[in-house]
Length: 489
Ligand code: NAD
Ligand code: 6OD
Image 1 (tube, protein in one colour):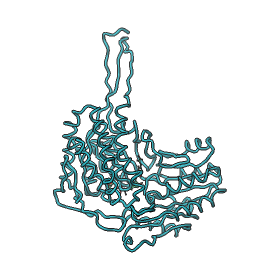
Image 2 (tube, rainbow, N blue to C red):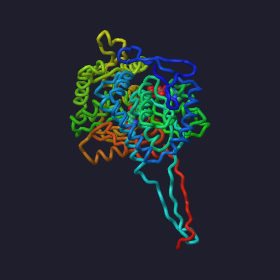
Image 3 (cartoon, rainbow, N blue to C red):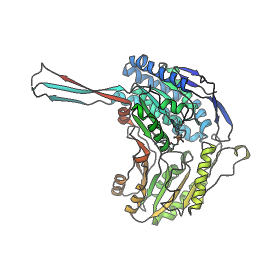
Image 4 (cartoon, rainbow, N blue to C red):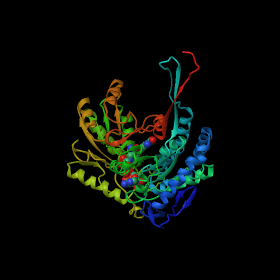
Protein backbone atom coordinates (compact mmCIF):
# COMPACT_ATOMS: atom_id res chain seq x y z
CA UNK A 1 0.00 0.00 0.00
CA UNK A 2 1.25 3.49 -0.85
CA UNK A 3 0.63 5.67 2.21
CA UNK A 4 0.23 9.34 2.99
CA UNK A 5 3.26 10.97 4.62
CA UNK A 6 2.20 13.32 7.41
CA UNK A 7 4.34 14.80 10.18
CA UNK A 8 7.23 12.48 9.33
CA UNK A 9 5.12 9.32 9.45
CA UNK A 10 3.52 7.05 6.88
CA UNK A 11 -0.21 6.88 7.58
CA UNK A 12 -3.35 5.38 6.15
CA UNK A 13 -6.17 7.82 5.54
CA UNK A 14 -8.51 7.90 8.54
CA UNK A 15 -11.52 6.89 6.45
CA UNK A 16 -9.68 3.80 5.21
CA UNK A 17 -10.43 4.54 1.56
CA UNK A 18 -8.07 3.34 -1.16
CA UNK A 19 -7.70 3.56 -4.92
CA UNK A 20 -5.76 1.52 -7.46
CA UNK A 21 -2.36 2.42 -8.87
CA UNK A 22 -2.19 0.89 -12.36
CA UNK A 23 0.87 0.02 -14.43
CA UNK A 24 0.34 1.60 -17.88
CA UNK A 25 2.60 -0.96 -19.56
CA UNK A 26 0.19 -3.88 -19.06
CA UNK A 27 -2.75 -2.54 -17.07
CA UNK A 28 -1.78 -4.57 -13.98
CA UNK A 29 -2.29 -3.39 -10.41
CA UNK A 30 0.93 -2.01 -8.90
CA UNK A 31 -0.45 -1.19 -5.47
CA UNK A 32 -3.38 0.19 -3.55
CA UNK A 33 -3.04 3.84 -2.56
CA UNK A 34 -4.44 5.19 0.70
CA UNK A 35 -6.65 8.21 0.01
CA UNK A 36 -6.45 11.25 2.29
CA UNK A 37 -9.76 12.69 3.43
CA UNK A 38 -10.45 16.16 4.84
CA UNK A 39 -9.20 15.19 8.31
CA UNK A 40 -5.93 13.84 6.91
CA UNK A 41 -5.39 17.02 4.92
CA UNK A 42 -6.11 18.99 8.13
CA UNK A 43 -3.45 16.94 9.91
CA UNK A 44 -0.93 17.54 7.13
CA UNK A 45 -1.54 21.29 7.07
CA UNK A 46 -1.31 21.46 10.88
CA UNK A 47 1.96 19.51 10.87
CA UNK A 48 3.34 21.82 8.19
CA UNK A 49 2.34 24.90 10.23
CA UNK A 50 3.97 23.58 13.39
CA UNK A 51 7.18 22.76 11.55
CA UNK A 52 7.15 26.16 9.84
CA UNK A 53 7.04 28.01 13.15
CA UNK A 54 9.19 25.51 15.03
CA UNK A 55 12.16 23.37 14.04
CA UNK A 56 12.36 24.51 10.40
CA UNK A 57 12.37 28.20 11.34
CA UNK A 58 15.06 27.66 13.95
CA UNK A 59 17.58 26.35 11.40
CA UNK A 60 20.08 28.80 9.98
CA UNK A 61 20.04 29.32 6.23
CA UNK A 62 23.30 27.41 5.78
CA UNK A 63 21.97 24.45 7.80
CA UNK A 64 18.79 24.39 5.72
CA UNK A 65 20.78 24.44 2.48
CA UNK A 66 23.10 21.69 3.71
CA UNK A 67 20.04 19.55 4.45
CA UNK A 68 18.73 20.12 0.93
CA UNK A 69 22.09 19.04 -0.48
CA UNK A 70 21.77 15.92 1.68
CA UNK A 71 18.29 15.29 0.18
CA UNK A 72 19.81 15.50 -3.31
CA UNK A 73 22.63 13.13 -2.37
CA UNK A 74 20.16 10.64 -0.89
CA UNK A 75 18.02 10.74 -4.06
CA UNK A 76 21.19 10.01 -6.04
CA UNK A 77 22.11 7.19 -3.66
CA UNK A 78 18.65 5.67 -3.97
CA UNK A 79 18.34 6.39 -7.70
CA UNK A 80 17.47 2.77 -8.43
CA UNK A 81 14.52 2.87 -6.01
CA UNK A 82 13.27 6.13 -7.50
CA UNK A 83 13.71 4.76 -11.01
CA UNK A 84 11.77 1.61 -10.19
CA UNK A 85 8.93 3.59 -8.62
CA UNK A 86 8.74 6.17 -11.43
CA UNK A 87 8.91 3.56 -14.16
CA UNK A 88 6.22 1.39 -12.57
CA UNK A 89 3.88 4.39 -12.31
CA UNK A 90 4.50 5.85 -15.77
CA UNK A 91 5.81 3.02 -17.97
CA UNK A 92 8.42 5.39 -19.41
CA UNK A 93 11.62 3.88 -20.85
CA UNK A 94 14.38 3.28 -18.32
CA UNK A 95 16.80 5.30 -20.46
CA UNK A 96 14.58 8.39 -20.30
CA UNK A 97 13.83 8.22 -16.58
CA UNK A 98 17.48 7.63 -15.71
CA UNK A 99 18.68 10.57 -17.81
CA UNK A 100 15.90 13.06 -17.15
CA UNK A 101 13.47 12.44 -14.32
CA UNK A 102 15.58 11.17 -11.46
CA UNK A 103 18.71 13.33 -11.90
CA UNK A 104 16.47 16.40 -12.13
CA UNK A 105 14.76 15.30 -8.92
CA UNK A 106 18.12 15.70 -7.17
CA UNK A 107 19.26 18.79 -9.11
CA UNK A 108 16.12 20.70 -8.12
CA UNK A 109 17.25 20.64 -4.48
CA UNK A 110 20.86 21.65 -5.18
CA UNK A 111 20.06 24.48 -7.57
CA UNK A 112 17.61 26.22 -5.27
CA UNK A 113 19.79 25.73 -2.19
CA UNK A 114 22.50 27.53 -4.19
CA UNK A 115 20.06 30.22 -5.27
CA UNK A 116 19.00 31.18 -1.75
CA UNK A 117 22.61 31.20 -0.62
CA UNK A 118 23.73 33.46 -3.44
CA UNK A 119 20.93 35.78 -4.54
CA UNK A 120 20.99 39.14 -2.78
CA UNK A 121 17.99 41.29 -1.98
CA UNK A 122 17.75 44.96 -2.93
CA UNK A 123 19.16 47.79 -0.83
CA UNK A 124 18.93 51.59 -1.32
CA UNK A 125 20.48 54.48 0.51
CA UNK A 126 18.68 57.79 0.27
CA UNK A 127 18.66 61.21 1.93
CA UNK A 128 15.49 62.27 3.70
CA UNK A 129 14.31 65.93 3.36
CA UNK A 130 16.23 66.82 6.56
CA UNK A 131 19.42 65.71 4.89
CA UNK A 132 19.92 62.65 7.13
CA UNK A 133 20.50 59.35 5.32
CA UNK A 134 18.09 56.43 5.29
CA UNK A 135 18.95 52.86 4.47
CA UNK A 136 16.28 50.65 2.87
CA UNK A 137 16.82 46.95 2.52
CA UNK A 138 14.59 43.98 1.85
CA UNK A 139 14.30 40.75 3.79
CA UNK A 140 12.93 37.58 2.28
CA UNK A 141 10.53 35.68 4.52
CA UNK A 142 8.98 32.33 3.63
CA UNK A 143 5.41 32.49 2.32
CA UNK A 144 4.37 29.85 4.85
CA UNK A 145 2.65 26.53 4.21
CA UNK A 146 2.65 25.89 0.47
CA UNK A 147 0.23 23.53 -1.29
CA UNK A 148 2.00 21.75 -4.18
CA UNK A 149 -0.34 20.06 -6.70
CA UNK A 150 1.32 18.01 -9.42
CA UNK A 151 0.59 16.14 -12.68
CA UNK A 152 1.66 12.66 -13.76
CA UNK A 153 3.90 13.20 -16.77
CA UNK A 154 7.23 13.94 -15.03
CA UNK A 155 6.20 13.18 -11.46
CA UNK A 156 9.41 13.53 -9.42
CA UNK A 157 10.90 16.22 -11.68
CA UNK A 158 7.86 18.50 -11.54
CA UNK A 159 7.15 17.93 -7.84
CA UNK A 160 10.73 18.71 -6.75
CA UNK A 161 10.82 21.68 -9.15
CA UNK A 162 8.44 23.24 -6.62
CA UNK A 163 9.33 21.51 -3.36
CA UNK A 164 13.07 22.33 -3.83
CA UNK A 165 12.68 26.12 -3.96
CA UNK A 166 9.80 26.14 -1.47
CA UNK A 167 11.93 24.42 1.19
CA UNK A 168 15.06 26.38 0.27
CA UNK A 169 13.12 29.56 1.00
CA UNK A 170 12.08 28.27 4.43
CA UNK A 171 8.50 27.21 3.64
CA UNK A 172 6.92 23.89 4.53
CA UNK A 173 4.86 21.94 2.01
CA UNK A 174 1.88 19.67 1.60
CA UNK A 175 2.16 17.85 -1.73
CA UNK A 176 -0.74 16.30 -3.62
CA UNK A 177 0.82 14.13 -6.34
CA UNK A 178 -1.25 12.95 -9.26
CA UNK A 179 -3.50 10.00 -8.48
CA UNK A 180 -1.82 8.27 -11.45
CA UNK A 181 1.72 8.57 -10.06
CA UNK A 182 1.81 8.61 -6.25
CA UNK A 183 4.97 6.53 -5.71
CA UNK A 184 7.96 8.87 -5.94
CA UNK A 185 6.33 11.59 -3.81
CA UNK A 186 5.73 8.96 -1.14
CA UNK A 187 9.27 7.61 -1.45
CA UNK A 188 10.70 11.10 -0.99
CA UNK A 189 9.34 10.98 2.58
CA UNK A 190 11.89 8.25 3.38
CA UNK A 191 14.64 10.50 2.05
CA UNK A 192 13.45 13.43 4.17
CA UNK A 193 13.50 11.28 7.32
CA UNK A 194 16.85 9.72 6.45
CA UNK A 195 18.69 13.02 6.16
CA UNK A 196 17.00 14.64 9.17
CA UNK A 197 14.57 17.10 7.63
CA UNK A 198 12.35 17.98 10.63
CA UNK A 199 9.01 16.20 10.67
CA UNK A 200 6.15 18.18 9.20
CA UNK A 201 8.32 20.08 6.72
CA UNK A 202 7.40 17.73 3.83
CA UNK A 203 3.96 16.11 3.77
CA UNK A 204 2.17 14.09 1.08
CA UNK A 205 -1.57 13.50 0.76
CA UNK A 206 -2.92 11.16 -1.90
CA UNK A 207 -6.16 11.38 -3.83
CA UNK A 208 -7.96 12.96 -6.74
CA UNK A 209 -9.02 16.53 -7.55
CA UNK A 210 -12.62 17.61 -7.02
CA UNK A 211 -14.19 16.55 -3.71
CA UNK A 212 -10.94 14.79 -2.85
CA UNK A 213 -7.45 15.57 -1.52
CA UNK A 214 -6.70 18.11 -4.30
CA UNK A 215 -9.72 20.25 -3.49
CA UNK A 216 -9.44 19.74 0.29
CA UNK A 217 -5.86 21.01 0.12
CA UNK A 218 -6.22 23.95 -2.26
CA UNK A 219 -9.28 25.32 -0.43
CA UNK A 220 -7.80 24.76 3.05
CA UNK A 221 -7.70 27.98 5.10
CA UNK A 222 -4.36 26.94 6.62
CA UNK A 223 -2.33 27.17 3.45
CA UNK A 224 -0.58 30.37 2.43
CA UNK A 225 0.17 29.79 -1.27
CA UNK A 226 -0.67 27.34 -4.04
CA UNK A 227 1.72 26.16 -6.69
CA UNK A 228 0.10 24.03 -9.39
CA UNK A 229 1.14 22.23 -12.55
CA UNK A 230 -1.51 20.67 -14.75
CA UNK A 231 -4.28 21.35 -17.21
CA UNK A 232 -5.48 24.87 -17.85
CA UNK A 233 -9.07 24.02 -16.87
CA UNK A 234 -7.89 22.51 -13.57
CA UNK A 235 -5.82 25.62 -12.88
CA UNK A 236 -8.92 27.76 -13.48
CA UNK A 237 -10.97 25.56 -11.12
CA UNK A 238 -8.32 25.89 -8.39
CA UNK A 239 -8.16 29.66 -8.79
CA UNK A 240 -11.97 29.89 -8.56
CA UNK A 241 -12.21 27.60 -5.55
CA UNK A 242 -9.38 29.32 -3.65
CA UNK A 243 -10.26 32.91 -4.57
CA UNK A 244 -11.93 33.69 -1.23
CA UNK A 245 -8.68 33.06 0.63
CA UNK A 246 -6.64 35.59 -1.47
CA UNK A 247 -3.76 33.12 -1.90
CA UNK A 248 -0.80 33.75 -4.17
CA UNK A 249 -0.88 31.20 -6.98
CA UNK A 250 1.73 29.97 -9.42
CA UNK A 251 0.14 28.21 -12.38
CA UNK A 252 2.10 26.09 -14.88
CA UNK A 253 -0.56 24.98 -17.33
CA UNK A 254 -1.16 23.43 -20.74
CA UNK A 255 0.17 24.32 -24.18
CA UNK A 256 -0.16 23.74 -27.91
CA UNK A 257 3.40 24.46 -28.77
CA UNK A 258 4.61 25.35 -32.25
CA UNK A 259 7.90 24.58 -33.96
CA UNK A 260 8.91 26.71 -36.95
CA UNK A 261 11.35 25.20 -39.45
CA UNK A 262 12.90 27.61 -41.96
CA UNK A 263 14.33 26.39 -45.25
CA UNK A 264 17.86 27.37 -44.20
CA UNK A 265 17.77 25.13 -41.10
CA UNK A 266 20.26 22.32 -40.52
CA UNK A 267 17.89 19.42 -41.08
CA UNK A 268 19.95 17.03 -38.95
CA UNK A 269 19.67 19.38 -35.96
CA UNK A 270 16.01 20.04 -36.78
CA UNK A 271 15.01 16.40 -36.95
CA UNK A 272 16.89 15.58 -33.74
CA UNK A 273 14.98 18.38 -32.00
CA UNK A 274 11.59 17.57 -33.50
CA UNK A 275 11.89 13.85 -32.83
CA UNK A 276 12.34 14.61 -29.15
CA UNK A 277 9.80 17.42 -28.91
CA UNK A 278 7.02 15.47 -30.62
CA UNK A 279 7.61 11.94 -29.31
CA UNK A 280 9.64 12.05 -26.08
CA UNK A 281 7.77 10.71 -23.04
CA UNK A 282 5.13 9.55 -25.57
CA UNK A 283 4.31 13.20 -26.25
CA UNK A 284 3.31 13.77 -22.63
CA UNK A 285 5.45 16.84 -22.02
CA UNK A 286 3.81 20.23 -21.57
CA UNK A 287 6.60 21.76 -23.70
CA UNK A 288 6.12 19.20 -26.48
CA UNK A 289 5.47 20.20 -30.09
CA UNK A 290 2.07 19.45 -31.61
CA UNK A 291 2.20 22.02 -34.46
CA UNK A 292 5.13 22.01 -36.89
CA UNK A 293 5.21 24.86 -39.43
CA UNK A 294 7.69 24.10 -42.22
CA UNK A 295 8.84 26.41 -45.00
CA UNK A 296 7.75 24.95 -48.31
CA UNK A 297 11.16 24.08 -49.88
CA UNK A 298 11.93 21.63 -47.03
CA UNK A 299 8.35 20.57 -46.22
CA UNK A 300 8.42 17.13 -47.89
CA UNK A 301 11.85 16.32 -46.49
CA UNK A 302 10.81 17.22 -42.92
CA UNK A 303 7.57 15.23 -43.16
CA UNK A 304 9.34 12.12 -44.47
CA UNK A 305 12.24 12.30 -42.02
CA UNK A 306 9.95 12.88 -39.04
CA UNK A 307 7.78 9.94 -40.11
CA UNK A 308 10.91 7.79 -40.45
CA UNK A 309 11.98 8.81 -36.95
CA UNK A 310 8.53 7.76 -35.66
CA UNK A 311 8.88 4.37 -37.38
CA UNK A 312 12.23 3.81 -35.66
CA UNK A 313 10.75 4.28 -32.16
CA UNK A 314 10.52 1.01 -30.34
CA UNK A 315 7.64 0.50 -27.90
CA UNK A 316 8.17 -2.09 -25.21
CA UNK A 317 8.76 -2.84 -21.58
CA UNK A 318 10.69 0.04 -19.95
CA UNK A 319 13.77 -2.05 -19.18
CA UNK A 320 13.82 -4.19 -22.35
CA UNK A 321 16.94 -3.51 -24.45
CA UNK A 322 16.16 -1.07 -27.24
CA UNK A 323 12.91 0.32 -25.81
CA UNK A 324 12.58 4.00 -26.72
CA UNK A 325 8.83 4.53 -26.47
CA UNK A 326 6.44 3.94 -23.57
CA UNK A 327 2.66 3.78 -23.24
CA UNK A 328 0.29 6.61 -22.41
CA UNK A 329 -0.43 7.09 -18.71
CA UNK A 330 -3.96 5.64 -18.50
CA UNK A 331 -6.88 4.10 -20.35
CA UNK A 332 -8.69 7.44 -20.05
CA UNK A 333 -5.83 9.33 -21.63
CA UNK A 334 -5.46 6.69 -24.34
CA UNK A 335 -9.17 7.14 -25.18
CA UNK A 336 -8.71 10.93 -25.34
CA UNK A 337 -5.72 10.70 -27.68
CA UNK A 338 -7.45 8.11 -29.89
CA UNK A 339 -10.50 10.39 -30.13
CA UNK A 340 -8.17 13.11 -31.49
CA UNK A 341 -6.71 10.59 -33.96
CA UNK A 342 -10.27 9.99 -35.20
CA UNK A 343 -11.01 13.74 -35.25
CA UNK A 344 -7.88 14.32 -37.35
CA UNK A 345 -9.25 11.86 -39.94
CA UNK A 346 -12.61 13.65 -39.95
CA UNK A 347 -10.86 17.01 -40.35
CA UNK A 348 -9.09 15.81 -43.50
CA UNK A 349 -5.74 14.86 -42.01
CA UNK A 350 -3.60 12.09 -43.43
CA UNK A 351 -1.56 10.07 -40.96
CA UNK A 352 1.76 9.69 -42.79
CA UNK A 353 2.70 7.37 -39.97
CA UNK A 354 0.70 5.97 -37.05
CA UNK A 355 -2.88 6.94 -36.33
CA UNK A 356 -3.88 4.04 -34.09
CA UNK A 357 -2.79 1.47 -31.53
CA UNK A 358 0.34 -0.61 -32.22
CA UNK A 359 0.22 -4.39 -32.31
CA UNK A 360 1.90 -5.29 -29.04
CA UNK A 361 2.84 -8.75 -27.69
CA UNK A 362 -0.06 -10.50 -25.92
CA UNK A 363 1.25 -9.78 -22.41
CA UNK A 364 1.29 -6.01 -23.08
CA UNK A 365 -2.04 -5.69 -24.90
CA UNK A 366 -3.85 -4.46 -21.81
CA UNK A 367 -1.40 -1.55 -21.61
CA UNK A 368 -2.24 1.93 -22.91
CA UNK A 369 -0.20 1.89 -26.11
CA UNK A 370 -0.46 4.38 -28.94
CA UNK A 371 1.28 4.89 -32.27
CA UNK A 372 3.47 7.95 -32.78
CA UNK A 373 1.66 9.93 -35.45
CA UNK A 374 2.47 12.61 -38.02
CA UNK A 375 -0.36 14.29 -39.92
CA UNK A 376 -0.33 16.28 -43.12
CA UNK A 377 -3.32 17.96 -44.78
CA UNK A 378 -4.69 19.51 -41.59
CA UNK A 379 -5.67 23.15 -41.62
CA UNK A 380 -4.09 25.43 -39.05
CA UNK A 381 -7.71 26.19 -38.04
CA UNK A 382 -8.61 22.54 -37.37
CA UNK A 383 -9.33 21.50 -33.78
CA UNK A 384 -6.56 18.89 -34.05
CA UNK A 385 -4.10 21.71 -34.71
CA UNK A 386 -5.50 24.00 -32.01
CA UNK A 387 -6.36 21.88 -28.95
CA UNK A 388 -3.83 20.32 -26.57
CA UNK A 389 -3.79 16.54 -27.16
CA UNK A 390 -0.82 15.64 -24.92
CA UNK A 391 0.08 12.69 -27.13
CA UNK A 392 2.94 11.68 -29.48
CA UNK A 393 1.55 13.44 -32.53
CA UNK A 394 1.81 16.58 -34.60
CA UNK A 395 0.27 18.34 -37.56
CA UNK A 396 2.87 19.44 -40.13
CA UNK A 397 1.70 22.56 -41.97
CA UNK A 398 3.57 24.35 -44.79
CA UNK A 399 4.26 28.11 -44.96
CA UNK A 400 5.93 30.49 -47.39
CA UNK A 401 6.94 33.61 -45.45
CA UNK A 402 8.22 34.44 -41.99
CA UNK A 403 5.21 36.68 -41.12
CA UNK A 404 2.86 33.88 -42.17
CA UNK A 405 4.64 31.39 -39.89
CA UNK A 406 4.64 33.83 -36.98
CA UNK A 407 0.95 34.62 -37.42
CA UNK A 408 0.04 30.93 -37.26
CA UNK A 409 2.37 30.20 -34.34
CA UNK A 410 0.90 33.06 -32.29
CA UNK A 411 -2.70 32.30 -33.22
CA UNK A 412 -3.50 30.39 -30.03
CA UNK A 413 -4.88 31.02 -26.56
CA UNK A 414 -1.85 29.18 -25.14
CA UNK A 415 1.70 30.54 -24.87
CA UNK A 416 3.99 28.06 -23.20
CA UNK A 417 6.93 27.13 -25.47
CA UNK A 418 8.13 27.29 -29.06
CA UNK A 419 11.09 26.08 -31.08
CA UNK A 420 12.68 27.78 -34.05
CA UNK A 421 15.02 26.06 -36.50
CA UNK A 422 17.20 28.30 -38.67
CA UNK A 423 20.88 29.03 -39.36
CA UNK A 424 20.15 32.77 -39.72
CA UNK A 425 21.04 34.43 -36.40
CA UNK A 426 19.13 37.63 -37.18
CA UNK A 427 16.04 35.65 -37.99
CA UNK A 428 16.44 33.57 -34.83
CA UNK A 429 16.42 36.74 -32.69
CA UNK A 430 13.62 38.42 -34.65
CA UNK A 431 11.28 35.44 -34.61
CA UNK A 432 12.00 34.55 -30.97
CA UNK A 433 11.22 38.10 -29.90
CA UNK A 434 7.93 38.04 -31.79
CA UNK A 435 6.69 34.71 -30.40
CA UNK A 436 4.17 35.14 -27.55
CA UNK A 437 5.45 32.31 -25.36
CA UNK A 438 7.27 31.95 -22.05
CA UNK A 439 10.13 29.83 -23.43
CA UNK A 440 11.66 29.72 -26.93
CA UNK A 441 14.34 27.24 -27.97
CA UNK A 442 16.43 27.87 -31.08
CA UNK A 443 17.86 24.79 -32.81
CA UNK A 444 17.14 22.66 -29.76
CA UNK A 445 14.36 21.71 -27.34
CA UNK A 446 13.89 21.27 -23.57
CA UNK A 447 17.44 22.34 -22.79
CA UNK A 448 17.13 23.61 -19.25
CA UNK A 449 19.29 25.97 -17.23
CA UNK A 450 17.37 26.04 -13.97
CA UNK A 451 18.36 29.66 -13.26
CA UNK A 452 16.23 30.88 -16.15
CA UNK A 453 12.62 32.06 -16.09
CA UNK A 454 10.15 29.27 -16.80
CA UNK A 455 6.40 29.60 -17.29
CA UNK A 456 3.65 30.32 -19.77
CA UNK A 457 1.79 33.26 -21.23
CA UNK A 458 -1.97 33.44 -21.83
CA UNK A 459 -3.81 30.21 -21.00
CA UNK A 460 -0.47 28.49 -20.31
CA UNK A 461 -0.02 29.98 -16.89
CA UNK A 462 0.45 32.69 -14.34
CA UNK A 463 3.89 33.64 -13.08
CA UNK A 464 7.42 32.43 -13.65
CA UNK A 465 9.51 29.99 -11.66
CA UNK A 466 13.21 29.14 -12.00
CA UNK A 467 16.23 30.77 -10.32
CA UNK A 468 15.42 34.11 -8.74
CA UNK A 469 11.83 33.91 -10.05
CA UNK A 470 11.17 30.93 -7.79
CA UNK A 471 12.57 32.92 -4.89
CA UNK A 472 10.10 35.70 -5.76
CA UNK A 473 7.16 33.31 -5.56
CA UNK A 474 8.21 31.31 -2.52
CA UNK A 475 9.10 34.33 -0.36
CA UNK A 476 7.44 37.49 0.81
CA UNK A 477 9.64 40.57 0.54
CA UNK A 478 9.61 42.81 3.56
CA UNK A 479 11.26 46.25 3.27
CA UNK A 480 13.04 47.76 6.25
CA UNK A 481 13.78 51.49 6.32
CA UNK A 482 16.33 52.75 8.90
CA UNK A 483 16.72 56.47 9.45
CA UNK A 484 20.32 57.23 10.48
CA UNK A 485 19.73 60.25 12.71
CA UNK A 486 23.30 60.54 13.87
CA UNK A 487 24.88 60.52 10.45
CA UNK A 488 26.00 63.62 8.64
CA UNK A 489 24.23 64.64 5.44
P1 NAD B 1 -4.64 17.70 -14.27
O1 NAD B 1 -4.93 19.14 -14.30
O2 NAD B 1 -5.72 16.75 -14.64
O3 NAD B 1 -4.18 17.25 -12.80
C1 NAD B 1 -3.09 17.86 -12.15
C2 NAD B 1 -3.25 17.70 -10.66
O4 NAD B 1 -4.37 18.46 -10.21
C3 NAD B 1 -3.51 16.27 -10.20
O5 NAD B 1 -2.79 16.03 -9.01
C4 NAD B 1 -5.00 16.26 -9.94
O6 NAD B 1 -5.42 15.29 -9.01
C5 NAD B 1 -5.21 17.66 -9.40
N1 NAD B 1 -6.57 18.20 -9.53
C6 NAD B 1 -7.46 17.95 -10.50
N2 NAD B 1 -8.58 18.67 -10.30
C7 NAD B 1 -8.38 19.40 -9.17
C8 NAD B 1 -9.18 20.32 -8.43
N3 NAD B 1 -10.39 20.67 -8.83
N4 NAD B 1 -8.65 20.86 -7.31
C9 NAD B 1 -7.41 20.54 -6.90
N5 NAD B 1 -6.62 19.65 -7.55
C10 NAD B 1 -7.09 19.10 -8.67
O7 NAD B 1 -3.35 17.50 -15.17
P2 NAD B 1 -2.67 16.14 -15.60
O8 NAD B 1 -3.59 15.42 -16.53
O9 NAD B 1 -2.19 15.45 -14.38
O10 NAD B 1 -1.39 16.67 -16.41
C11 NAD B 1 -1.39 16.99 -17.78
C12 NAD B 1 -1.58 18.48 -17.97
O11 NAD B 1 -0.58 19.18 -17.24
C13 NAD B 1 -1.42 18.94 -19.42
O12 NAD B 1 -2.38 19.92 -19.70
C14 NAD B 1 -0.03 19.56 -19.44
O13 NAD B 1 0.18 20.50 -20.44
C15 NAD B 1 0.02 20.17 -18.08
N6 NAD B 1 1.42 20.37 -17.66
C16 NAD B 1 1.93 21.64 -17.63
C17 NAD B 1 3.27 21.86 -17.27
C18 NAD B 1 3.88 23.25 -17.24
O14 NAD B 1 4.99 23.38 -16.72
N7 NAD B 1 3.25 24.27 -17.77
C19 NAD B 1 4.05 20.78 -16.91
C20 NAD B 1 3.50 19.49 -16.95
C21 NAD B 1 2.17 19.31 -17.32
O1 6OD C 1 12.11 21.56 -16.67
C1 6OD C 1 11.31 22.09 -15.88
O2 6OD C 1 11.69 22.73 -14.89
C2 6OD C 1 9.87 21.97 -16.13
N1 6OD C 1 9.07 22.62 -15.27
C3 6OD C 1 9.44 21.21 -17.15
C4 6OD C 1 8.07 21.02 -17.47
C5 6OD C 1 7.74 20.04 -18.33
C6 6OD C 1 6.38 19.78 -18.65
O3 6OD C 1 5.92 18.69 -18.90
